[in-house]
Length: 92
Image 1 (cartoon, rainbow, N blue to C red):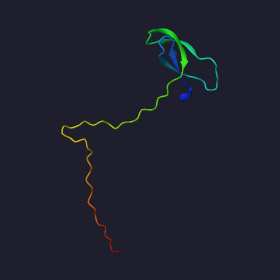
Image 2: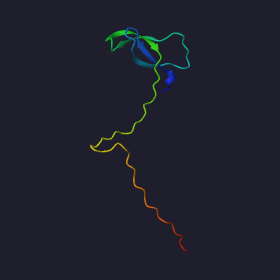
Image 3: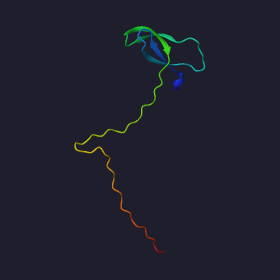
């Protein structure tokens, strides 16, 4: 579903957007959509008018949190390097 086709329906009395609807991109209408919907914040049926939806960015993925052990340092621990092995040429 394209973000361009989505609209929100905002309550006239409290101003909260509780419904999301789609528009037909092929039809251009000058007037805004109005509908009588149930507002769960007002707890009654009120007029809801078309409003723009806020565009929210996708949440960033975070690394899983690890538990801290008592007495552990906050510095990252480096893995020990493998010893260097001398390369030799084998005779054919």
